[in-house]
Length: 204
Ligand code: GLN
Image (cartoon, rainbow, N blue to C red):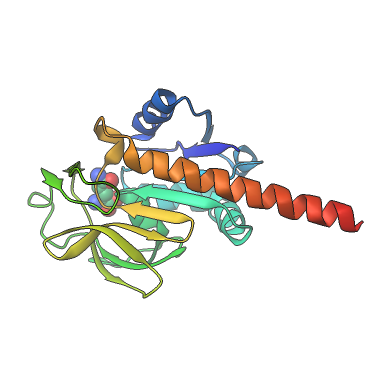
């Protein structure tokens, strides 16, 4: 299995440090070629408008959509969650539209949305430290999206099949639980790809 980290802007190095801590190899993704053989892609925090602009300029937007159609796994944090969303409001902006969530970028005003909380999640008994920095708010989700954690009655950590989105920054704290969950998802994705490829091969 191969994990990629989108490395055009934002806190991609923080994600790399978490994967290093877990002993998981990764590649930085800056062009469509870098996505070759990547089974799971991390979309970091940063500035989602810049991310979308760079994705369009490099052709990575289409390459990522193709990867999603081929069963790739995705993990977006903060700006990355905005990029994954089907709809972005406050103000409206382009996104990749891979996850069935609607996010609002300026729900509380930029200042109020930055804070650190210890909140329960469905991932374990112990609460998780969550760092919010100019965080978007997930305003609506489809039925097929599972809520793994909430703050003030709004989802802050969600999963839809092989995609995870967090409106906070798990890459900025010591707790590696969410990254571990993503790595397991990518392993599963890679295994099912390998078995479908061998099924194709044995049919030939
Ligand atoms: N609000 C930022 C955006 O719209 C995201 C902030 C972050 O990633 N910390 O891109």
